[in-house]
Image 1 (tube, rainbow, N blue to C red):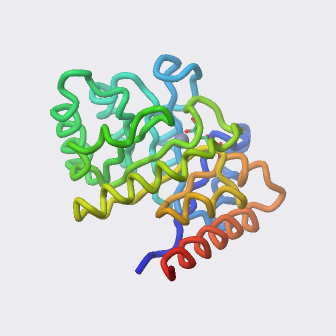
Image 2 (cartoon, helix red, strand yellow):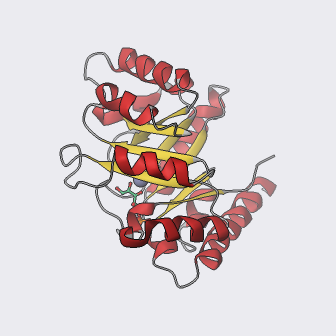
Length: 235
Ligand code: DX5
Ligand code: ZN
């Protein structure tokens, strides 16, 4: 049995001059979560929003906040973000220390759990999904990036659906049930492609926040994903 697809609009595509109104509009439009993209200008070639905005966002909404850390030193910076009481914090696998990946992963997951949040790990499109074999059991959510992180509004990379299938299969074989999230170029046309292979959480930036009608965009993404998910299950 599967639950309805979770749609997590990325506020990187929001109008920052009216962010409060954008958040209210997302709440009224049926957003399930709010996706919060943090970029450090080092791990990715762009800078975005950080702790002061996250703190205000936390005070402004009861929706689950899903923080995507595209930063080089997640372990070191984590306390700043955990202090804002997010619901999910996702770090990049590629940002973990080369030799002690598993130790660092353990430390990160423990810190996130101790703060009462859930822990995610993200993979860039060119990182083999097999790198997670050792640490798969630690994570509450696996984020399969469907664009190279750094910018909103990019095109979905078609190989991403196959990568979702690989992660879902590895989890099934290991008897694990992490949420599988997909982020980048997701909209009504691409949502079913990844949902069919087991994506549970879909991040959408431009497809929602540049749409005329947020509610319609969110429900279209959710419905098309749900249909793809259930028709696959029926097979
Ligand atoms: C990319 C970010 C994404 C991005 C999504 O680095 O992690 O969350 O903002 O935007 P769209 O849906 O427009 O690709
Ligand atoms: Zn993101």
